[in-house]
Length: 185
Image 1 (tube, rainbow, N blue to C red):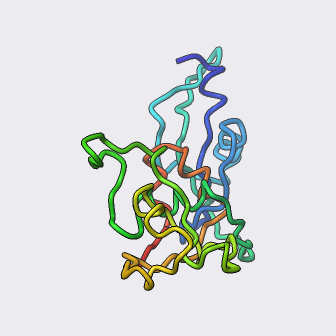
Image 2: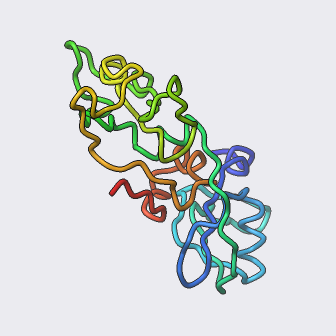
Image 3: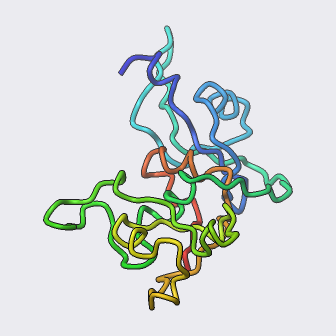
């Protein structure tokens, strides 16, 4: 693995003591925090940065040594964020990527964002009004309310606690997911 490639990786930064996710930062920033004694390594990436004299393991997750008070950030809604929050699981039938539909395995591209209270009836693009749905369920529901078709929600859509990181986590290493609280129930 080249040093240049390792430098382009990202690192999940956790708050001290409670390990709440704070940000996704660059490898150089993470190494600066570690060398300054302001953070500790929680998870390694398995990659290394080689200098003339030393070899540094590239972290995947680090935590600050002390807790910092961070005001709650406003959740910014996005279609990608909804799909990641729901783990590409249909809110109506529960199918996920890899499940078979009409004899073919579903992929992430087969999922859409459904407005529970339809946009045609004044529904908004909000975390609590949108959820991941498979094409079949979304097509069946159309511009109706779920109860009008006897469709039950498998969970209540909620605003994610760490919304500003949802997209970054969704595209980050699997090791990050254990530090993120995205609850459907």
